[in-house]
Image (cartoon, rainbow, N blue to C red; front, side, top):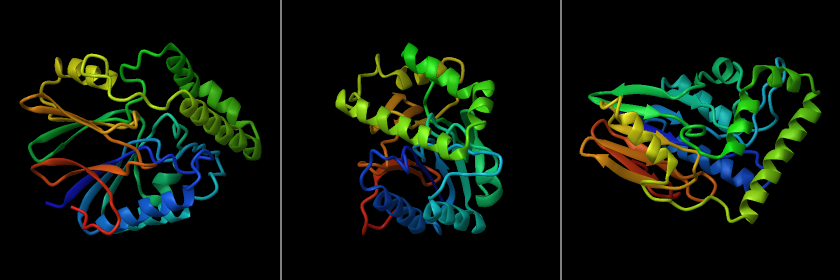
Length: 255
């Protein structure tokens, strides 16, 4: 069979990333390099740093990426788009115009004799009360309707500025904490708890944390946390039998 690819956390459009256009082009070149090898591509959230769809307006930019995604779906490659905590507010644009399959909740899928549990990872075991509060506000339908009442000029400016300030504050405080160990890494803890009632899961694949992790949970189950597409350029690839965590280095032949 052809390969299945997984990646997350590009945060395209971030005003806190100085090489944003180069970053988008690199992601597009990667997708172009796998378009004839892939049966499916899973984009596991936070592909955009802030994406908010109004009924008749979508964010400016991203033409290279959206064009490449459309090319993939036109070729018959399934492109699955999972919302993250930065691109929660997807409507039907990406589905109708680019042909993606949109996921607003974690999903369990089967490929061959393997079972995958896929999610961006936000809200899965995170103990932060502040994050839980913000997440509930962002997902609240009334809050979304009120935000939609803002003119797109002001709404997009607010969202992009919020995301920029949040990232810069986070970086001043030391950035993402490194791997915290099996007992403290909340996505690992979540996966272990989930296995207690879903023992058939072979692979958990998450984004969100911006760390690279490939960990055996037991003899039949692994958890992978994908690194970002800001500095790590990490992806996972499943060839029908084996799952690998890789880093995209331009000029190398992709699996």
